Image 1 (cartoon, rainbow, N blue to C red):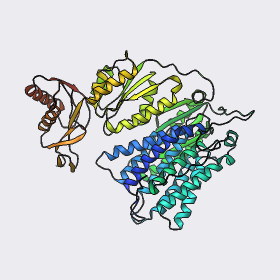
Image 2: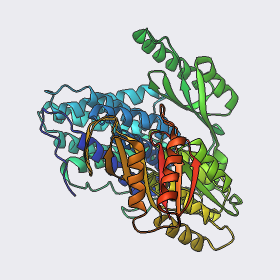
Image 3: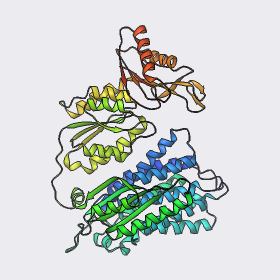
Image 4: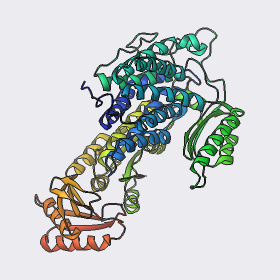
Length: 573
């Protein structure tokens, strides 16, 4: 394992360290997800804590990658995106609490002065994360992830007070978390009865171990579970003990926008905090497991309740709820193995395609695909792709990401969907399409009547044989494969790389097409975009005329894709 050096104790925690942590944490939670799900007996034994924490961190990572591809890839921008991504993508009780922990940590690191010691910054970040998450929970309970983080924060503060380096501070914090995790059955009767440690605490320990790995290169030895380190723990039932849900019947989650005058920032922040506190109190009268996290007018709300309507109405009093999600615990517990229940009926095959514009969405829908909106600047989260996969009702699903950064999110969604719905026979295949035009080619040869593996093979082969390119306009000064570019320059993209720099979009488009056709081809596809100040349709027609004049044996089709940033997308088959 390569160690990431954080630039010394007075130079701030580097961007590389932050990005490396995000990737390591996602991989670590992916590996531990099934184990953590199996530990889940409190507050509701619904078997999804590991999945929820994993998807929350995946959402944060996806947001970070969006910023990495943009013009403002600073450490502060990445940390801000990390916090907001976790907040927007948080799932379940554990995910919402985790999002507040991650957000508070990111905010303290972003606010650090250049001359502050990294070890002290990390210790204070953990302390602030522990305080913020504790305050966000309506009725905090000992023996949970709150307890584990509090122990980690205390150990970190103690080592930082001794002048320890950041790697030493995190090592102490991660060790304290593992020790606190092992004690959770002594603090929470439900865990002791089931013979397990706390699921959320275990997930948090995985994350702290990932942070330690980033700074030291070492992989900590995990705490031994009650059933052995290598076995996936299964809660045991003592005679007369029922681990099935006996509290509220529903989990309700939503995002809540609270609007305040833009010219009164301080007053708005106080009003925000007051509204969140009032909402926690109101939800506390309706159920339990109340968590309200966020800030700056955007909050993530979670409650377990029997009165779904009242829980949503409580949000309406404060602001505008959206992305409302309601889960019936009895159904969820049955799916996780708590009770016998028939698997949902799945049949047929569907394609899920990410579309970067309304015209492209229409093309995919005409081909029978379920469309998830995406594209540069608004790529879909793993959660959105997961909902499309599991919500389509198909037993076999083919996913077309149509964008290289979205491939990993699609793979995470596919893996989660198969793990959660394996009893129903769900199969998901992700075809690694890196461009919209590859997705169009793949969906054109999709044939539901043939075998799943055969269909996936044909679609994959077709997509791989597509040579693709695009033209766009440089947003900033940069060095490309074709040399330096300045803001406003015309850029030609070939196979994902900036390969042409010029001052005229039509000329650059002609050069890109010439390179794509250098190895021959029978069909050219041109997709016009929607870029402010440009007549993309006219540009597409000029490109069509160029091909028809120079390559009379090649067929040309032109579509209105409506994608942003790229006036033209092009491909050769």
